[in-house]
Image (cartoon, rainbow, N blue to C red; front, side, top):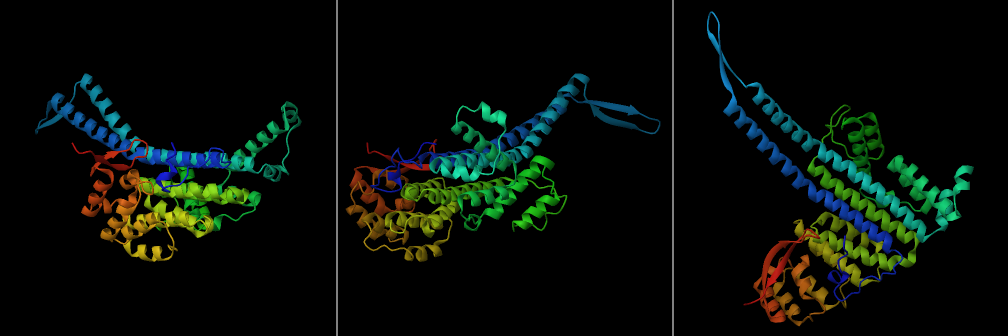
Length: 441
């Protein structure tokens, strides 16, 4: 996924240096997010296409039978009996159409289950990359991970270097971990990196339910087992009272949307917690990416994830001394609350942040979030085009409501010499509606 310029989230800020040592890990996290977005975004289109195909085939089958069926009358002593039948050549065609209808119906049921399997597989693949990158940042941690491991003399003699041997053993260890339970994987991470993680992962119990449901899909077509109930109970995961031993669980689009949120939020928190533990000196770089990620979720209209990431950042993760990053997280949290209809949460949230001495762009944000559009238009008029660019006005969700007001349009035309006309298009890269401007003729 192509990285969006950090200037969009942090007006006037600088993009991250390519030499940033944490870049490979944070890029991998972004790639994982892109994979999840692609999976979730493609599912509705695929299911709609299949359901439409099913309806078309059913209609074709009915019309074919109506055109080709023959009336057959059988005479008996008391009365005659009539029925319909097809010639053999027509019966073969009708059978094929009926078979195709059933196949499409099966696909509609199987595909969501396959998406769940793929989601957990992509999570595991990302965790493997994360561990390797963290070991690259702190090579001495590899020794702790391998201190009690053994290797055959044959493999030892085949290895060309100690580094090659070490990489083989790490790959083997990660493979063994990922073949086990995610609970054991978490315990291993906590031991190796000497950091308690589960109490900092609010969706961990839901993640365990997700992985256990994936196991049901793989091994028993979704039929609930004793292990599923036992593991979920141990993890204190919420399970519907209707779910009993032997119940067949269905993977719905709604469940997959929740799984997307759970997998992303969990991987995001694990990554940022361990990165800061391994290399505290990289915290500033990671903070910038965290702010960008919160904004990226906002652009994708993943408002609950925006709230989670921004709240996570403000809760002791992003350096408190970096006021601008804290303020950006707060603003984007407030925007997410507004979208979700939680307007009553906006004022307390804004009051919890220190705005003293803040830049004019933050004063503009506060006025907009307080719905004081007349005062906001006056601040907007005084702001330089560098502090808040034309692109920001057109794309930052902060301006979604403000853009519809005459105050905004009047100042926009004065600043940029064009009328603002919200022509909506779908951005192929990010999948978010983007308002466009239209120049005067």
